[in-house]
Image 1 (cartoon, rainbow, N blue to C red):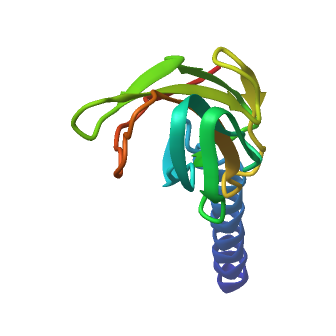
Image 2: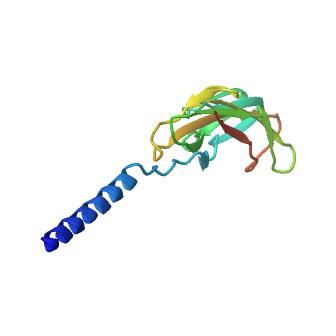
Image 3: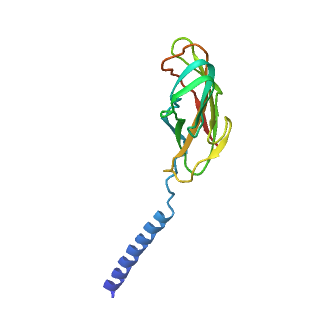
Length: 168
């Protein structure tokens, strides 16, 4: 009889251990999702190839459409494209975009002025939601207008424009 009780006690101890193991794992907290915003610039803005007969503007909107005013003439719009940023943030939160409306591009003299925006999500100060999935990337396209002075501002101009992405 004593042997039967020790087997029963051993079985109960084994089952109790398994039960407590299951309880501990079933109440464990899942790892928290990423709460920081990640932004990767994937494409710079490009106005294609153009020449200038007098002062004017050339615009590439966030969809890649190109237009000109004044004495700016498009030679090739093949390379014209908006700037693209890939935004990654978990939990379907909102992002506020802010940017300075103008920046200067340089190549010696004269410099050119770039009016930044609009974006596909709206102008500076706009809020947009990102997807719930932590692996999904929300793409933000940004257009701009280049103000070109008269004369011969030939060459390749470079510059940058800061955009701030703030999560709500």
